[in-house]
Length: 103
Ligand code: FES
Image (cartoon, rainbow, N blue to C red; front, side, top):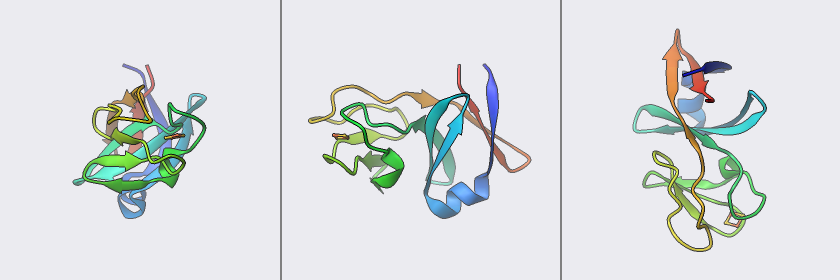
């Protein structure tokens, strides 16, 4: 494991619902879901769109471009037009700040 500091307070993610961050050269999305924070890749696997610009419902994020759905917890693509999962990353909160394992 190699946790990287995001410099984002967990409370800020919970307040926003979704936030884009760049860590270790990766464009990531932080999502607040049921009191927990999850990290995924932020770029849709179908074409270029930022998932943090999408709509979150029932544990899934809907891509703003063609409405592909991804499960936020697992990264699993939920059907056409998306067929490739998004990456997911382990998250830890240390002193209120979000860290993401980018390995
Ligand atoms: Fe995300 Fe097409 S770019 S569904």
